[in-house]
Image (cartoon, rainbow, N blue to C red; front, top):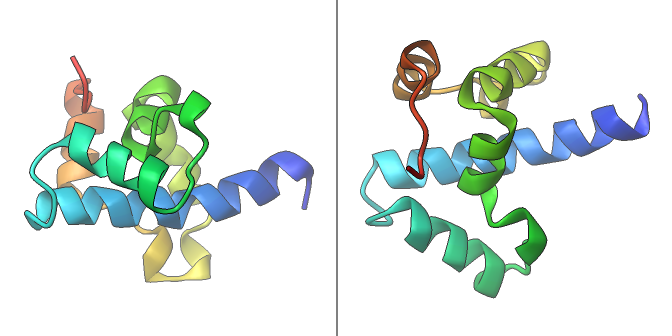
Amino acid sequence: FTDEEIVEIMMVPLCLETVRCLEDGIVESAADADMGLIYGIGFPPFRGGALRYIDTLGVAEFVAMADKYAEFGAMYHPTEKLREMAKNGQKFFG
């Protein structure tokens, strides 16, 4: 794997679990989820959090990136709601 692929392999499940937490109501907002990651596990603040990271890449681009690693298991499978967001050009912020 390249350095970039290693970063993607590590980021995809973290981001998708954050998406699931938001969808399941574990956190109330994208901002709450991202702040929890920054203050709770030390997510790099310059990235803005996992959901801001997805927005920065583009939701459709993130879904495509996750799909590249689908063979690694369910942790790499985007949710249906995230796929709908990608299809509709939606974002978590703004």
